[in-house]
Image (tube, rainbow over all chains, first blue to last red; front, side, top):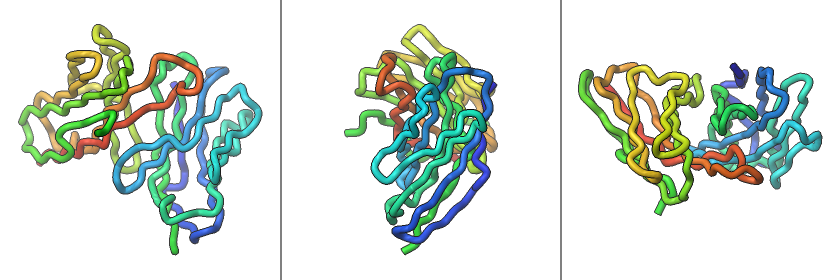
Length: 115
Length: 116
């Protein structure tokens, strides 16, 4: 079974600065997908970014980028030019090729962006 | 209107009561899921269904049951609620197709359940 670990329960950053959220995972599967989901105070879960394990290039979506280290089983999220609207709980998630689209989530990191 | 709708949004109940959380979707997706969110534990899968005749247990199915009434409807029941089932419950859907949408879950707005 796969596990996903987020070791930072809470983080804070000043507006306009850069912050990195950490995620590690464990799996025996050779092909898989990794995700970061955002949950703002509204409770709505929103997909931020997706990484396919067989792609060496790190995914980027505007101010959001990942640092995917396959050998280390590490998948961190970097948020550049942080905005107040980035304040949210962030979840790292894993989906193995054999998972049938079921996701395994980490514990979450509460990010607060301060003005 | 939301693509994935959950009712009720909030509910307070007493130990031993039967509770049903309902989920309906207009996305036309075959796959539907029920997750539970607890502080410090993230989201954990309770049940999932890949089509109307397919129901599967997730990692924490004890104390829960589900019904897939139609492609668009997936209900979660607590037959006899207990306090440690107090949590935020999410329904989600996903597309059977792969490609760009693979792995993306579309969530409802959550149902906060408190069992006293």
